[in-house]
Length: 193
Image 1 (spheres, one colour):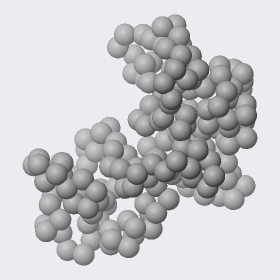
Image 2: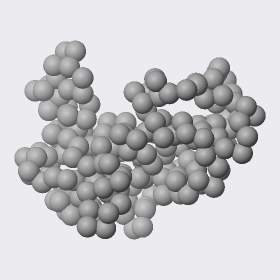
Image 3: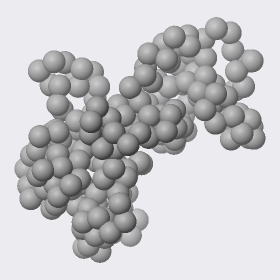
């Protein structure tokens, strides 16, 4: 995760506390006007916020105790959080895709699902695109609505190594563009990614 800017107290009047988002959105469909509020089918455990003692966290712990299967991928992450969301929203998983009406504070005990691009400028399915070389103006446009850029380990394992910015011309992969600006100590403290 690279934080592009501090999380504000509000985003367009909506508090950015007790929130989560989805990264399984398929932005190519999300950007179609008729699918505007297709915010995915389950929330991600990569980044979310909760106040201490919030009902969402308590519910997630209870769900974890009921659903965790040792060695089963995602049984302790997105599956748990999405089931907890369903329980606190009183929906039993029937309202999909996620959207701000059915998964907003009024229906979900003060918890809200927020627009995915706030935390995931690339959906999980297309995260490899962050290793493509692009002009800085492309990256500025792509990340302008995001507070965080999630560089998925599962997508980057087969991707090319990201080198220092001086190894590229005018076009750089996202990490070579964002790293020196937003997390220079971490970026320059390791060998190429």
